[in-house]
Image (tube, rainbow, N blue to C red):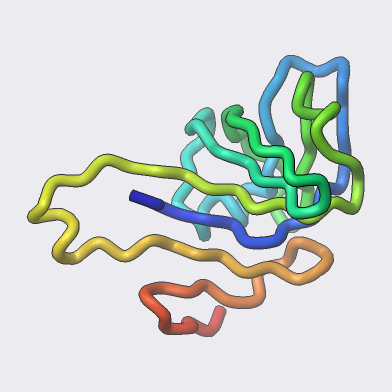
Length: 122
């Protein structure tokens, strides 16, 4: 199941000569319930690329979304991306499960957190 998503974040940096991963503003990680080093799927809205890597925490309130290592070849600064995590749940857990969907503005600041078709004000 989709556990969480950061929807339409903008890439702010791309660092080819860095040891892999995706740097994400720690405020966004917290809002989306993404742990440091958790596997993420990245979908690039601009070029259609999809890839997996892991999240590393970036400076809070910075808005940083940085493609590191090989991922830097799969997007450019300014591209809009969707960052998704998945989880495995049993039937009992699914009865009450609600994924976190974090909506951001053009500067990667949190606008809303959507849960089960309900918009929660931040």
